[in-house]
Length: 236
Image 1: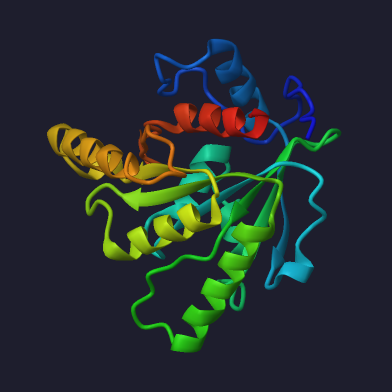
Image 2: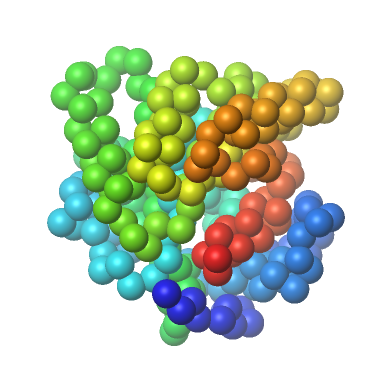
């Protein structure tokens, strides 16, 4: 699929700073395009409770997966520099739906997909079953899905419920990358150990990207690197 070139951002509501944490190894030209892209128009499109409600597969998609309390909404808001973007979809009845956000306008560049949270210990079995069917069908059947970002709380590392999702992605042959959240909540030495352990586990999974990105929605840590990684996946 041909991906439109990211234009210079004009009139965006989410101004993105030049001073955010950048990966020293990142392509500076792509990093700058990612910064401009996430400063431009980003809007909530729709919530899809089933596959028949998905938008046409006309542009690349980047999906976000994670446990219910991993900080997914906060990370999406930090990524787009819009405090209330992810809250648009957090309304009763939408917690088990795929929530779509358009990135770019004239042209539309790609879409972010907020997947339902998993790991809800008290959820009824039928809800868990519905979640698994929806996610399995989406992962296996969405040709425009470029990458899934799997969010892991850096305070806890990868849990068994996360491993189930990683194996689901491996089986579906969906490229994914692990992103650590809440990295500011632990000491630097602890974060370094968690990141090393997470990367070691990622190398065991055939569909996983070998490098892990550590982020903090509150402090802005790793956000610029994540934007660049998203754009890299879109253009791959």
